[in-house]
Image 1 (tube, one colour):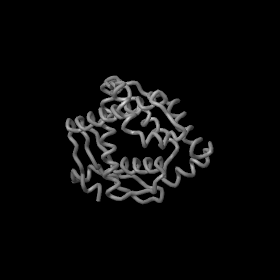
Image 2: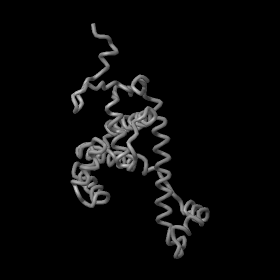
Image 3: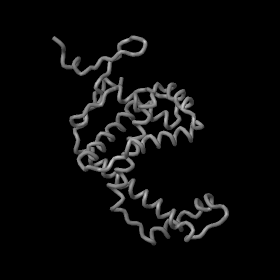
Image 4: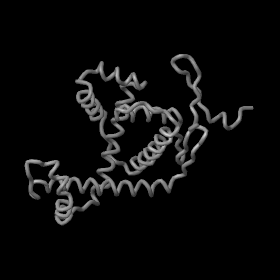
Amino acid sequence: MMSASLLCLVLSTASHGAVVIDRIAVVVGKHVIKTSDIEKDLRLTEFLNREKLDLTARAKKKAAERLIDQEIIRQEIVTGAYRRPTDAEGAAFAKQLENDRFHGSTAELDSALAKYRLSAAQLREELLWQLTVLRFIDERFRPGVMVSDDDVKSYYDGHQAELRRENPSGFTLEDLQAKIRQTLEGEQINQNFNEWLEDARKRYRIEYRQEAFE
């Protein structure tokens, strides 16, 4: 009789014909995160960050935490009926990446993806998800943000050295107030989002399968 633990394993065949065990790594509510999900997230993240591929246990645990956050965000988007970007917007984002990093060459992009064992379809899916998260954060947390003129003035007065480095030709408060306001709004949005996410994590049953990270 097959054991319950064995039933938690999904078998897939690698390109060289060997059998790879795809374990359940984390359970978030009713959603399962598998070791293959973690490895794909690592490959995509490190590709986009231009980092050397790292598949160590420590890196996998960091990727698992990202995927837990993503699942919580995904559930909030579904229940809140937030608007999603279109496939066309995702394709445009992918094309922008191709133009910015690979001289507009699909062949160069595909070659770089191959080094991380990724496909163009996986990249497009990831970029579309990133757009989805950014839109959710903006719609969910921007309406509660308020930046006063006093806040802008305080930032201006307290960051003179930094502002001089960024604007060596000179500047005034009037010159920079729109940019400062945008910076402060972004900081508040990020703070509100992080506080929400920390609280949302407490409402989910998160179960780690440590053997999947060994």
